[in-house]
Length: 280
Image (tube, rainbow, N blue to C red; front, side, top):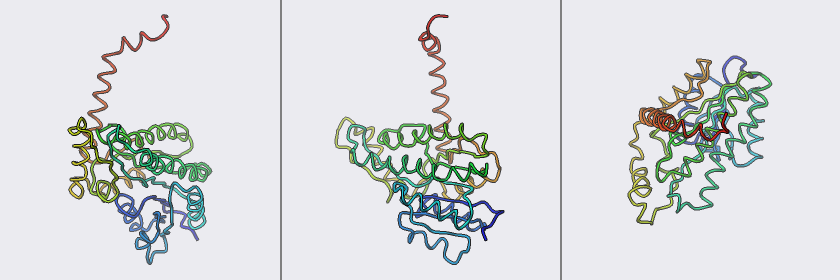
């Protein structure tokens, strides 16, 4: 019989990083947890010997697997209370040198896959008038860094999607939170990162420099994925889902500074902005 008291978590991208550490925490609390990866053998160890864990194959870009995974989760546990859209990866290149297939592949995973799994989970949450959706975005969802324009575009897309979704489900008992980390000690800047080397000298000190710097900090980032997982659990337990959760000092300082900078610029152009309306 499905547990009717503990929250049921469904986490995408559990082979490494945030997804894996968060799954360890939820499973460790005895909560029913669905852990997913493109190859479930990479997450089988997380649920070994557990009667409240379920490992599933899930490529979020495969519509058939998305439908099958959500059905398997609901068949086993009766519902999904918390969806964590974590699957995705980074791609870096200068805008001019970005490769079409690399860009489209990343958008399929980071954006369209996230859209698909969210659509599949929403009917159950809506029927129960209860649920939390945590979309793992990035500080790049607010700041377009040189060399990360296409990645930032994918995360900006998720932020806009999350704004609209939050407005649509706010009266249905469903919380939507964009979780925006800064640099964390995951595989994002290592094994999972794809790059197109910048060969144009004009970009050497901007995009080129950032590509080299990003790869060079892998394994030395200040963010702790376990503490990040604890923070995500806390906002779900608190029962009042914030629209945004910035993770780590770098993300907090960078994003809040960016918002202040943007507000100051907008206010400085107030009269010009208002002048675009028909005269009253």
